[in-house]
Image 1 (tube, rainbow, N blue to C red):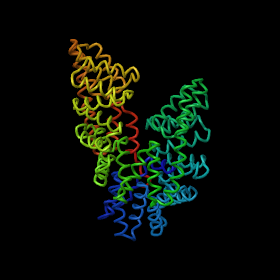
Image 2: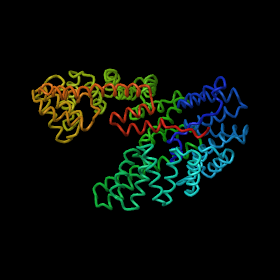
Image 3: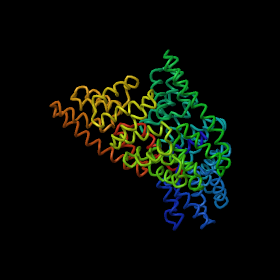
Image 4: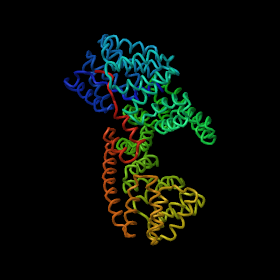
Length: 561
């Protein structure tokens, strides 16, 4: 599974030369692949292969679309047919190579990639594919770092600006212990594409070996931040922290390593079963759950979308997809899945909960209220569901309803900090500022960086006529979350009330610019956008980790001409 993820994660999208000129499903499938609409591409490619059974292009398209949508078994069958029709077509060999890799058949995968290189020796993308497959490792073969480095060097000779080849060369050098050249190459790569977790990890390894421990810690922290599911990032971070004598931090990193290492083992075993027979629904659902738990939402979403399309009445697949789309910010797909769950199981809270969370994530608090209320009525004894409803009521400005709910929860669960904090927020919302500030001050002793409580206490201080105290809380909010528009607006108000008009105007101009930025980001998220433009906006908004994830999806270099 790890090797399959490596090839897909960097973006394998095949453009079949000439398909755009062909009529009907073949053109539709090629166009959908080029635009990143892989599920649409798969449906069109199935139709194309049926309509044009003697067309190698149609079967290569189908194999590629099946690979990208985690329908490995279908992809293997399509690639076999493509090779029967066109045994000397390098495109068919390279897509078969990645399908074999997905099934942990690395020897066969390497042989297929070598054949693609033999048939098209001047095509750098086939050499990149060969280099990546030669890394092997784990369940899929012995690494050949020298062979990989040679493949990447030749790819760079053919295409000097190929970032994917530059990364591969740096990786093969560092893993082979050739740190000086490897660190130089990984530095050049990071100038082209910052925020790549594995790149920071590799540079960290080189720095660790030359005992630049402070720099290594920074790299391993970045690696863990950008790709937290990779246990090796946490393992090496704890190694360096131990060498520096920072035992508590090392202990924390070790716990994260153990957690993610356990998940990796579970994913690997389940992936073998699934990719051997991608029609195995039970294995597919189990793999999806493990991927979600590991935080690998992109792969999980791909797998679940395929399950939902292939099995439209499979309730669990739709429910899992709706839930995973919340942290992955796939609002449109998640909403569709949640509505399907509600249609199939209207008496269960799960679909309503997912829909409420999705609408809330999209910034549509008012739209989130009704499904949250329905879920709360279906699960009256579930405190988490009730707390979610309370939070959504606050966001929607329904403070009287929120106050009544949190007052009840506070009595039922007097030790629950979230119930007490929500009660304080609701008090401020209804204008009972003195009581609200007191309640929020109490809970902030336990969680002093809680953004919502700091923000509402700041509003309460404004209501009490204490702009100085309000400014402190609101500045704290903006320091923790620069994207918090309401806190910036509150600071503008404080500046005006304290006669600092120039500061107010300056901040208001920045605030209006930021509002426009956040609105555009929200609209693009709503559309399911995964473009470099969205990544640029996220970086500008101070959300680099999200930008990296989006850029990884947008950066889809083709392996075929």
